[in-house]
Length: 329
Image (cartoon, rainbow, N blue to C red; front, side, top):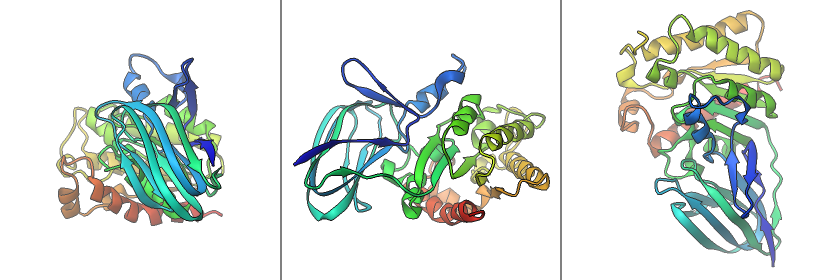
């Protein structure tokens, strides 16, 4: 019986301490500017999209970790099917028996998408255990809490995780609850990461805190996209405008703009970039992901989808994103 430690995908860096614990970072911190970016740094220490994959014919999955009381769970999938969902709250020690498996089965562990986690050990012990190398398009997904997906029942049911598994993509989730504000730290990280396809869901956090006004928002989006394009000159980019949020559609924020205004501005920037010759950038209309009736039913707090809502997002966005990712192959 071999015991094979996890090799993590989806982290920008992994930090190890003297006691053997390791923690994850999803952004390059060189451009953090405390205290203004403290919220972003906190979200970047959460493990949305981070996962490990093995192949095995049998196994016990060992998880030694520590997380907050409000942290999301761990998800264990075998051949794409959820086998175990176990808590991350407090100091946890899980020994999960996967039993006998079909030869060379795929075993995947997804770390909690919400909550600061540190890991002491994650390993799979069993027959024919090997780390599975990831293949498929390398996908960077940047966005807000609607990309981080705290409200999903588990990390494997976040909509980016669902889409990545459906299409066989390698996911790098840069979803930051409340902190999708076009920060240089996010822009720089996206520029440094390898990518075959990038999606950027922009506008909802800006509306909520009125970070940019009608004077500044479109220009800021244009600069953000232009710098990413310089780093990735040939990569298809899908820009997703804000998902429907019924109370915010026609309600001006502190800057005097409605959510519909931000959606139109995002569309206008993408149109302008395409008119200037960049045909590898595409608009995905976030306002069309849910109907008004679906938004009322699937967003209990009027802003965040529930688990069923995230599944519907994956079903609706997946084909549109795949069309962009494959448009210039």
